[in-house]
Length: 504
Ligand code: BES
Ligand code: MN
Ligand code: ZN
Image (cartoon, rainbow, N blue to C red; front, side):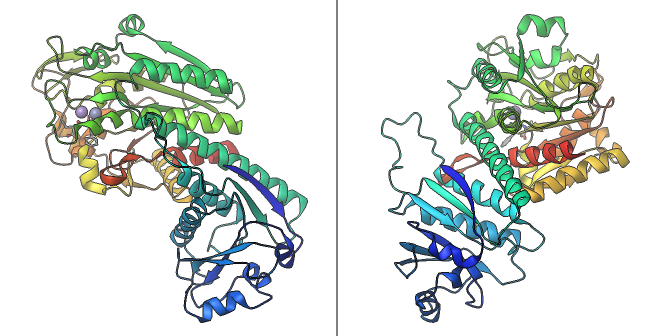
């Protein structure tokens, strides 16, 4: 999909613009937006409202043919109550526009929605929301289907109108926002595509190859460590997870050094289990295919790097991905095995299905060498997080001191802006008690109560040398059921967070 921005000297100029479809807004009380009024010289839009065919409720649409003016069609979209259009209302409207345009017999459209419609948000936020909704509607996961999903119909070229005689500076800023939004959409696409690939294709080696290709395309630094190097680093915890697998483990390091050479980097660490059977603590069969999504943390790191590299973000960011499979076999780790992590802490593995924390803890020790400004890990870590927060919010965990409260608040705010929200959960000593082992420094499970919290508490013990946050994306990284597929979350949250960091 091709996007561009066109500035109009005033709202009436929109009516003179030749287009296959002009998209304009209408409010709850049936009140046409200024752009819609400009297109209503012959009263067709007003008549449509009077007829009751459209109310202005968020997300409702009405398509009118040749209502007058230079547009062949006008798509009216409901935005909700004037003066109190919420983020949600506008996102619903943007999704409805995307749906309507994707089935239209036109190849091009002009979207002219009021810039100040959403309370507390500006034109940049609206541009980004529109681009993401439109790109979401054309995403397909059909690379392995013999017959591709039909994409012949629908709008391919979208012109986004700036309609209030904006200054040259504002126009330039809007063009930059558009380019950044497209970069973000490209990052989300990569994350979804990797997540949706089957586990026989998307192996640790495939993730490493993808990282190398991405680094080549966008001029990132990349390094891939293999088993020998991981043994030399004494990553006994990570390596214990890969014991049962025929696929070699990979440890991927990506570098985007867009900031000053001496600036401490932000480090992203993504869980890259390309398939999680549970190992010897085997998972039940029903829905096990969805454990191909257990590399979505890794995929979100790769997607975020694609986005920030395309944006040429002025910030130092390092991405680290421990990648392997969790399989049962005669060589697999047993419940009861004790391993020594890179940090030197010994771990009693009481359940081989709690493997995410076992690969992450060594990665979290490894990243100490970068003297990070902050470390954020992203992992499909626990079913318990899905029980706690459902599929709406990612779980956010940090220690509770001033530096960590600040980091947590930045991540929460980025999630709100990006419509990719997180919810903060506790890390407290009382929960750490549950990880006591009779035979090692720590056990890898803390029992059923507060399962997502004890998992975070486990990771916390390996992160005491820097400021750190953990994102549990078990409930948000993919959808099950008829709409099964990766969501691309939390790439919008992470990218927005990094964009804000770059401004400081
Ligand atoms: N990858 C899973 C977590 C998961 C399960 C995410 C279902 C999304 C849906 C993780 O490796 C795992 O198996 N966790 C266990 C931990 C338990 C053994 C303490 C879980 O959540 O059941
Ligand atoms: Mn598991
Ligand atoms: Zn897992």
